[in-house]
Amino acid sequence: MKEPWNFNLYEVIILTEATNEEIILVNNFCRSSVPPKKLVVADAYGVFTRVLNDFGSDKFEVLDKNGEELQDVMIKSITSVEGHPEESLVELLPNTKHKFEDGDEVILMGVEGMLLKEGEKHDD
Image (cartoon, rainbow, N blue to C red; front, side, top):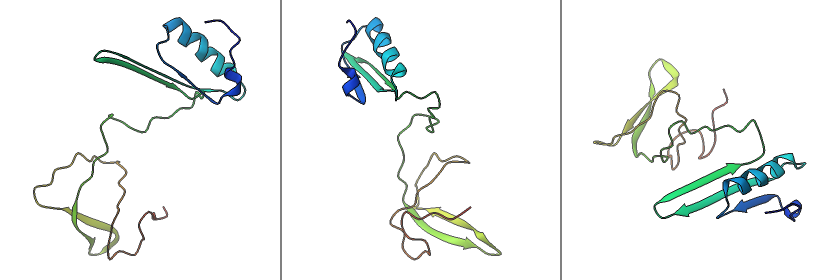
């Protein structure tokens, strides 16, 4: 693979079936472009795959701490904690398990009877 390519015409470069040397060469080009190009590399070799995403920023932040799929949990009720108006007690349907941990962010959808509308957040 020789330079120059016409990659300067694109914002996102997607590579498949590329060698490691080609990937490094293209990634260096993408990172040195102004603004940086986004790079996606994807390959499948039988049961093995590789995926690389480089979106040109050293400040890339991953918020997914465990790589697991997001979970849906059915809630039975949400009630106020007496004497503590800023706190609520969330009760799940019987025999419902979850993997939530302290600090997890939860999005409530399809809520009926609460003051906030779907998609709104409390101001901190």
